[in-house]
Length: 141
Image 1 (tube, rainbow, N blue to C red):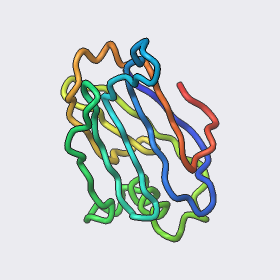
Image 2 (image 1 turned 90 degrees about the vertical axis):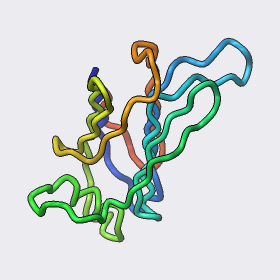
Image 3 (image 1 turned 45 degrees about the vertical axis):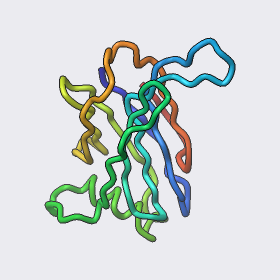
Image 4 (image 1 turned 180 degrees about the horizontal axis):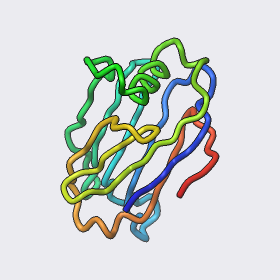
């Protein structure tokens, strides 16, 4: 499975979030399990990944994208710039979420950003995608 999210990052963004989840139960207010929660906090300059199983969030994996990275990794630099005060220079963003055997692999403009090991099975029950925050969607595939 591969999901593609394309959009325009708003000027002076605060955050954006992507959820890959199962459909919620039939009870009112019930929420489905989340196989991947990807939060990008532009203000805190951090990327957080997590999963929710049986209504309980697991331990979040957080990292600052400002860790050393090869200079040829322009997409990571693009996200880092977007997380900094240079966000006015960034316009279009293409994010791919690739479901591999052991992990979700997240790419920006075709370059690796981060990964997240699966905590949820069966993966086939992950049928819902939600994207919200400071991103104007132009395409989801």
